Image 1: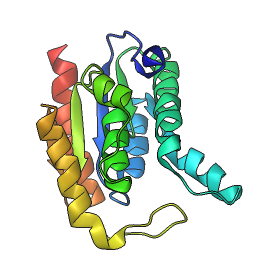
Image 2: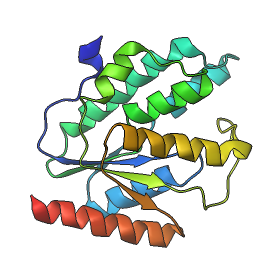
Image 3: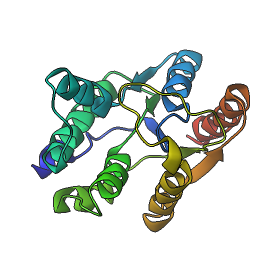
Length: 187
């Protein structure tokens, strides 16, 4: 199972949009991918959760590993299709944070192990200073601060390089582009 959670080898730059629900990650991932004429990795857990909902089922602890495996499968498929840059709407560390927050600290040991091995060049931590927007999946509008703290703590604990994105969509985009340009210029 560890092999299913491991990143494919690649020399491309990988950046991750990281943070609580309804903080603009997907919109920004799409916009950055368009700007850089590259691909972005969607959030597998969203489509997985929507399918469970269609079947009248809730997500449980048993879904954490299938979500993680699905996310890495998507990332690895898209990694092989880019040369320079891949934008990731999420990663396994985000899956770990959600698992811990939703299931009272539970996280499969294999997921704990692998988050330290998979590598990304930079994380963009999205702040909660944008309005929360409801949808069928989002369910914690009153816990935004607590969730944000869990995400930031995970980045610090795992020694991940990150930049806080805050402000308007345009402000976030400009900061992200500046940092991605710097990464590209360093390679």
